[in-house]
Amino acid sequence: MTNRSAHAPGPLHELLNSVLLLLVLGMFVSLLLLWAQAGGPAWGAPDATPTRPGRPAAGDAALPALFTPEVRHWEADIVRWAAAYDLDPRLVATVMQIESCGDPQAVSSAGARGLFQVMPYHFAADEDPQDPDTNARRGLGYLQRMLAQANGDVRLALAAYNGGPQRLTEPESAWPAETRRYVAWGWGIYQDAQAGRAQSATLEAWLKAGGRALCHQAQARLPLRPVE
Image (cartoon, rainbow, N blue to C red; front, side, top):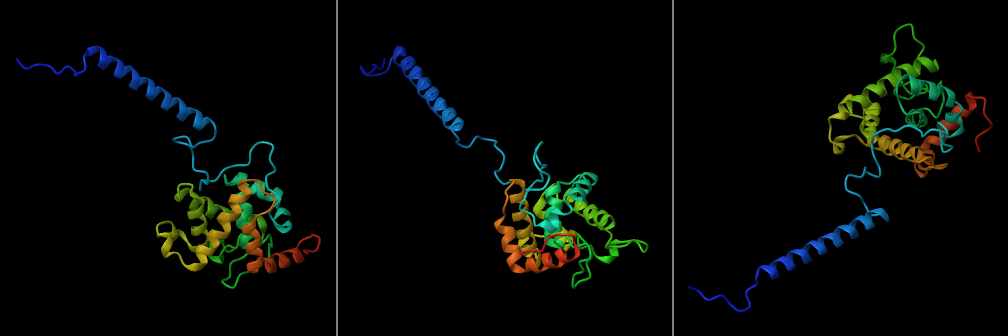
């Protein structure tokens, strides 16, 4: 028979060790819960900057003040069009902002027309591309489809709006510079709009990069006070 060491733990000693371990684990879990309640990240919490579109909270203005007066001139129509195509009005306003700055007669060098800068081949022969409702129907209908195909990813939908459906399946590194700039402008402005900010650094940068001239052109065609 083998002799047991005098220092080998007995059953009582093992039980006490187990109780002590449970107490330590309990204290650790309690500290984690207190930390989470105090502002620490909780497992499963949503991303702080989701790419999915939202909707203005009840009681909030449909369009925050950050959009230029030329775009806010269309606010009632933007809300109506957004409801018709199940889109966030802030996203609709963002696209109008960087496409035409609210100029219904805008024509790009590539031939895109109207408030949402829709290419002529999207229209039927008897449609007026610069009619606001017609332009919204074609432009926002396309945006809605791209958003659905992108599984609600606003950045991808913006890329497809600018560069065509092929952008949905391309890696971002393959996007042309124009599309990357477009998504940077649009996503930055839309994030600020979602946050309800009165100003947007991204919108200001867009204005300085050439958007201000587009807005002056829109102001000249709309019943607004002069743009300063």
